Length: 227
Image (tube, rainbow, N blue to C red; front, side, top):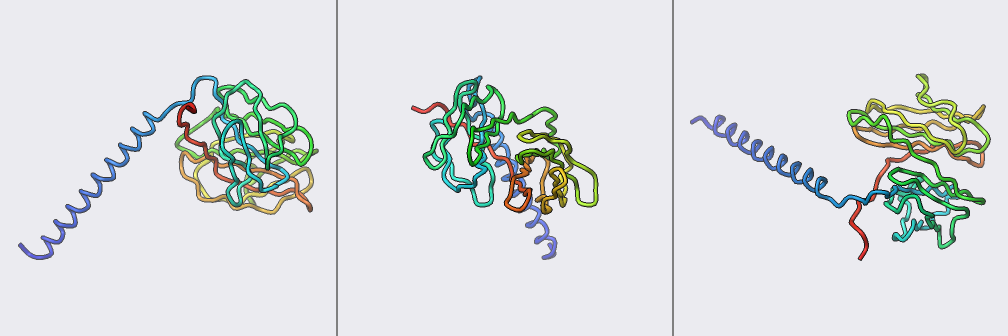
């Protein structure tokens, strides 16, 4: 047998083995997700935005402190009891106001520099796993927020303060520009997104005008009730 033929067969065998291992790994991951503990009915998924950007750990309910990752605006979503008052502290200081996240839903709790917390219901309708999901939050007081592709179409418009919108988009890269009334924030480049990814845009108050920031959404795995 010519040497090139033997080498080609060895390469083909290695590729087949790698494909089998990859398939087994994917199957194991699917089974892990299938049999992972599920939150009980009536649970809520909650994340927190600290508008004061104190950089202090956030405690949601009875969970462990959740430090923000560098550059993130919000914590990850955590599973808590829905339809009941929720305690949130930042750096050991309790948030003002009453926080009651809706059961069986996602919520973003915004903690201002002063004043009561604001709970924003995160929409989940229109989910399309063949596309990426993009959410936009306007957290700037006194203006309607909008986001558009630079030199392109509008993505979100007319979003009131402390409100949010979401839509499914094709997983593409884009440079986004946000406006707040007549003020314009510095552009933000959307990172590469793939089908099924979730990404949030936050229009924030800044010292010299609105600021557009963003991050990927993440949910803490549910590990079952505490012992």
